[in-house]
Length: 212
Image (cartoon, rainbow, N blue to C red; front, side, top):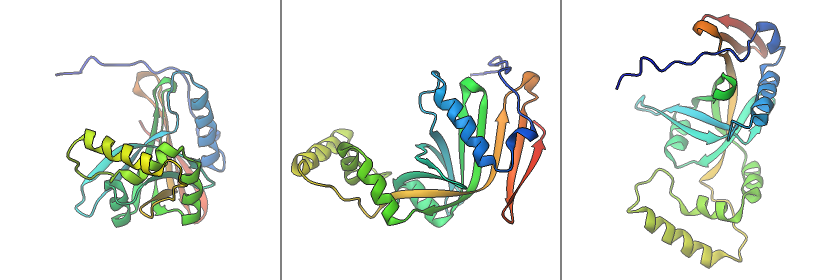
């Protein structure tokens, strides 16, 4: 199936080096807020996280960003999942956002590390009871006999614990991506897109323009 004629004309906005400012995280927050305001973007906090395991095999999946800190991004996962194990083995990870209606992409590279138990506990308690139960019941990334059996297991757990205060399992918690590099991409005419890359070197951000 050839897709040679699948083309889109990009003309919504532009991006210059001067717009980034001293801290590209602040500029990312500006773009993120604009994505949140767009009626065409369902989940502005959906990001693709890519990892590489000890066999040098890459994997990518979409997760939900839960906090933007001064120099890091935080999401949550089962530490025994495929991505959890990969991050434990090789903490170099990449996270990317693509907001098609705004013709924008942002790519982060950095080091992944577990958040503190206290931080993970606070977020776990903020989740709906049904989501807490799902995190406990699901052995993420493990082969299961059938989806129906998983639902039976889940319903049984809910019935047995419906009046309980659930505790976060030790194998579930936050991952903090400590950012070392950010690339901003803005679609432009004739595929001459704007690309600005920011690298953190010795505590200071350096910005450069990349050819599309």
